[in-house]
Length: 68
Image 1 (cartoon, one colour):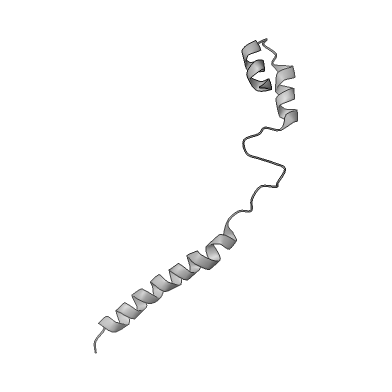
Image 2 (cartoon, rainbow, N blue to C red):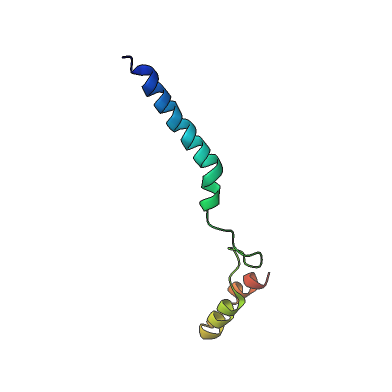
């Protein structure tokens, strides 16, 4: 019996199955995006005001940069 066609069919079947999995099923298990009102680069306002109130060291340059 010749095994090469069976091994080739099995190998190609695994490649096609993996391709279909990554094309159709992989995006459905990704984490959901953040809510529209929250962005990763902006800190919450309450956190920054608490930090400024607790640790006021009088650094005018930092305060000027933050307001700009």
